[in-house]
Structure formats: C-alpha cells, structure tokens
Amino acid sequence: MYAWIWRHLPGGTALKALQAFLLVAAVCALLLFVVFPWVEPRLPFNDVTVD
Amino acid sequence: MTGPGGDDDSYGRLGPPAPRTAGDRVRTVVRGLGEVLITGGLVLLLFVVYELYVTDYLTGRKQEELTQELREEWSRPATADPQLRQVELGDAFGVLRIPRLGEDYARVILEGTSETQLSQGPGHYVGTAMPGEQGNVALAGHRVGKGSPFLDLDAMRPGDPVVVETADQWFVYRVLGDPATGDLDADPSGIAGMEIVRPTDTDVISPTPDQAASAAPTGAYLTLTTCHPRFSARQRLIIHARLDGGPLSKADLPDGPPALYEG
Image 1 (spheres, helix red, strand yellow):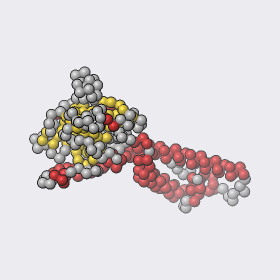
Image 2: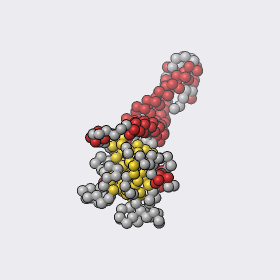
Image 3: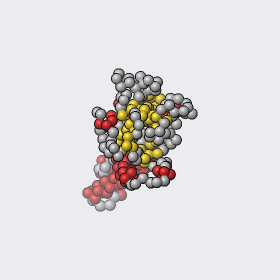
C-alpha cells in the first residue's frame, strides 16, 4: 500500500517526501477533526451521567 | 505514520520487473496486510491522543468563548421580563468554581447533559434545582478529556467549597461530611459527601440525595457526577454538597466570596 503510493507520487525523492508528509498530515487532520468527533459520542466510555 | 522510504526504495530503481511469481503475490498480500494492521494501530494511538489532548484543547477554546459571552450577557442591564432570563437547553448560565481543583478553577456550566453540552463544559441535569433553590442542583462533567473538568473530584474533602456564580449572585456549597475528622461519610444528614454508585442509581440526583426522586427536598443541595474509575464508565463518582448560608450579592463581592480564598 505505502510502496504503491510512493511509486505513484510524481517527482524526485525530495518532492515525493514532501507530498508523502502532506498526505500524512491531511489524513491526521481528517481523523482528528472529522472522523473522531463523529465516532466518539457512539463509544461507550464517555458516560458521566446517571440515568 | 510510516513515512516514505522503508522497504520500498528498491522498486523505483529496478529495471524492468521480473515476471511475478506466486511467491511475489503472496508477499504482496502479506505486506499489505501488515501495513493495514500497523496503520490501524497508529490510528488507535491517534485516537487516544485525540481523547486526551485534542478534546481538551477544543473544549478549552469553547470555554473561553462561553466565558466571554456570559460576561457580556451579565454586564448588560437586567431585562425587566424574567421570561428572557429563563434558562433554555444548551444555554450557559453560570460559572462553577472549586478551589480544591485549582486556585483559578472556573468552568462555565450549561443547561443539559447530552454530549453537545458536556463537550463544552459541565452540564446541569434538566429539571433539577437551579443554584440557590431548595432541592438538588445536579451537574455532570467529564472525568478525562473535554477539558477534564471533574478529573480530580476524588480529592474533595468535607467542607470544601463548591461555588456557583450566576448573573448577580454567588452561592457557596460545601461538601458534606465531617470537616473536623475528614470523614466524608459522617455528615449529620446521613448523606455521604462522596459515593461511588452504579450508572443506574439516579437517586443521587434526587431533590434530597439518595431519597426517592418524588420525595420533597429537605434542603438546598448540589451534586456532581462523573465517571469512575478514570478512563472507564463502569461506575459513577458522586459528590454531594449543601448550601452554606444564603446567596451573596456580586455587587458586594465582585471578586468572589471569602470561601474562594480559604486555602
């Protein structure tokens, strides 16, 4: 998977490294600010109320 | 994440690839599987970071906003129509101060205990008493993450002040128990200052704590609920406090009641 991505990035090693870094950053941001906030309320370990 | 480089450097430099054998295919599949598993592990780690730090940051920013909004609202002249002062679901309506949890510990509290409110700050159980009223002011807050407002609630001692600030008054509640001996269970009222209960024990937020929900209030109480043990939702940690004296006017005490500065 990672090898496949690496081979398909255009440019030399430095450019590829930069793109790879940006990809990783984008995925992290997507997870942190979109996926996790959506998933979290559906998980059971955040209940603090009695009901 | 596993950055560039690693095991794949050779791919780009090889000449025309040799015909793929069955072994190559197996290797590709196994490598792909390994990468997926490693990635999954890293995503889970990132989720832990999110829970412990990123939510703290997001809630902190939200609390700053709410504090500012509340200050502005409070500085406006009081509306003649008390209907406009009615607290609606989701409204920020007070500030909770607990010196035991930090000299400058102050959290804006909101009406409601769904995740929408609790991710912004401690939430007030709908239908329970409002600050100063007879009955039980019940508040829920996160233990870990989301600003961790109630992280160290297990450090509370008998007599510790829990101060609620509203538009124009201070209310000082004190944790039940015997301040002389430090015994949280030895309150004359028979109500413990701290208890650990099952999540279904709703009696803790009854008008008189631990009585039936329909029983008439016997005093002005305040109850804090959070999860217990830390990182788990198996039980609930409960703190009970009782109103100490009447409301104090903010006009007289702009910097807060003396109870805030006992420590």
